[in-house]
Structures are given as structure tokens and as C-alpha cells.
Image 1 (cartoon, rainbow, N blue to C red):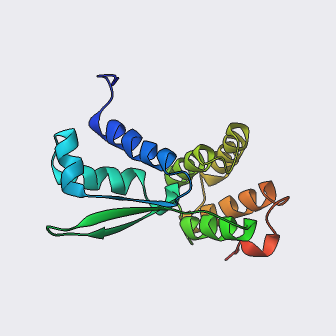
Image 2: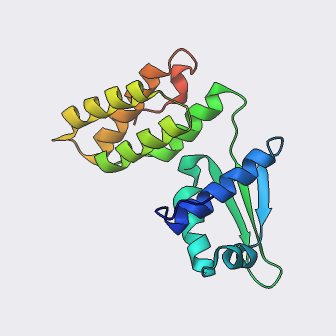
Image 3: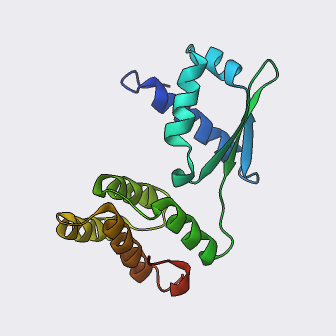
Amino acid sequence: MQDYSDNLSQVIERYILGLFQNEEDENFISLRRKELAEMFGCVPSQINYVLRSRFGPERGYLIESRRGEYGYIKILRITYDEPKEKSKHINDIIGDEISLHDACRLLEVLKERSFITDRERLLIEIALRNESSNKTPRKTARLFKRLLKSLMSSEISEENFIDN
């Protein structure tokens, strides 16, 4: 069932992703932090870590949380009905400044979410690495947005990406 080489965070992440698969018509799931921690034999802060690191906006999720005895965690999956919404989301995540390291991490997330292919991820990463040696995070963000805009131009109109 469980590969013992997996770390606990990966196991919890797979469990939560499995809940989304079981509820494919729903864009959210509700959990109780305490029950989840008991199920996996860990402290609630481990659950918090998994939620922050694996289910943030950059990965396409929003977390709503209420603490206390009757507290819950609601994980909302962000969906996009129109390419403009996807474009705005990516633009917001990149922001005004981004380091090369964070840009590469975001490219991997975009690939995981099927926004881009592995080949496209690699091409953008190479371009960013070649250009970022003497660039500020602000210039890296502008270049990153331009590269994504060019790549996605067939499905996203240009005015959705903001060049500052």
C-alpha cells in the first residue's frame, strides 16, 4: 500500500489529492485537521505544513481554515472558465518581482498543472537562466511574463499580462 521511502508529507498530499479525485464534481473538500493528524499519527502542525507547501495558490488551491474544537479546513481547487482567468492567476503569482529560483519552481508547478509542457518549461527556464545573470528580480519577472505571454498567445490575449 504505502512505500516506506515516502515521507509523511508526500503521503498526506497524495491522500488529499485522492479526496479530490473521489469528489471530481466538486471544487472543494472539507477536512478536520485534528482527525487528519490522528489518521496519520502526526501533530496538526504537520498538516499545516503540507497545506502551506503543497496546496497554495501557486499550485491552484486556496485554503480556508477555522481553528478550535469544531474547526475545519476547506481546500478549494481554483478552476478557470476562460483563458483570461488563467492568465491573470499566473500574472498575480509572478507579481512585480521574482527570483530565478522561484521562477523555476513556478515553471515546474505550471507543468504539473498542465499549463505548459515539459519542453516549454525547459525552453523558458533556459531563456531565464541565460538572461538572469545580470537581471534584477523585477526584470526577471517582466521577462518571465513576456515569455509566458508569447508561449500562451494562442489561448490568452496579450493584454492580460502586465508589463511593468
